[in-house]
Amino acid sequence: GSAPQTQRPRAGFYRMIFPSATEHHPHIIVIGSVYPEDVGDIQRIADARLGPGYISAANLLADSHQTVFAAWRGHRLAGFLSASLSSLADIRRDTPALGALLAGQPESSAPIGFLHAVAVDKAHEKQGIGTELIAYALDTFFLPHKASMAITTAWSDNQGVHVGGPLHRNEFRKIGYLENYWHADSLARGYECPTCGKPPCRCTASIFAKSLLVAT
Image 1 (tube, rainbow, N blue to C red):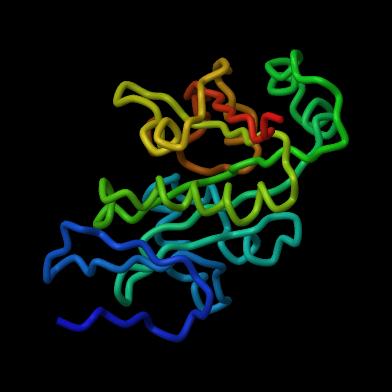
Image 2 (cartoon, one colour):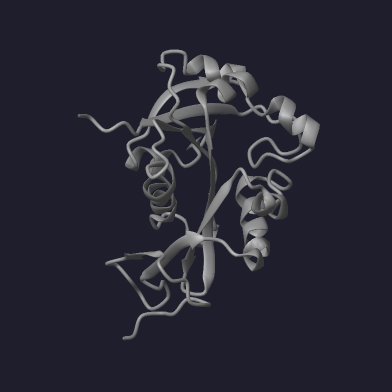
């Protein structure tokens, strides 16, 4: 049959074919930058998967320091990712505990790519969407800006590491962990954790990194 159409033309976006397509799961996924009208879907997914109040989608889309990509499956926004470019000096200043885990990294003027959030609608999970969102951010954002590495924090609980599978499939490696990483932030901002519920969040952050340096 004919391929399913997206809500509107999104020229130049990456398309991935799912070989195991079924009538109920459109086999084309479209990944690209978001539009202002996507704010409601992003907020819904963020609240359900990352915890109510953890992300304000309106603020996220208005933040000039972060870039947001989303995945659509058929007419549905199925997941999103937010990322930014930083420097090793800024990470050490703003998040000393995280900076300490990067102590072995050489000083460089090259930026570091930071994955802030990856969330997929529960109805579309385990279909490769998180993996492709991360791959898209690496290929179209971090690498073109000549980032030396990509890092992210993923929460760990008794069910494993959030987005651990997509990170491993994109060849990230775990470099350490930080206990109670969101404790103070959850109290200050009042958001709920999917695992802990009401603040404070007591989850451990697993830190993942991937070198983006090209061997010569």
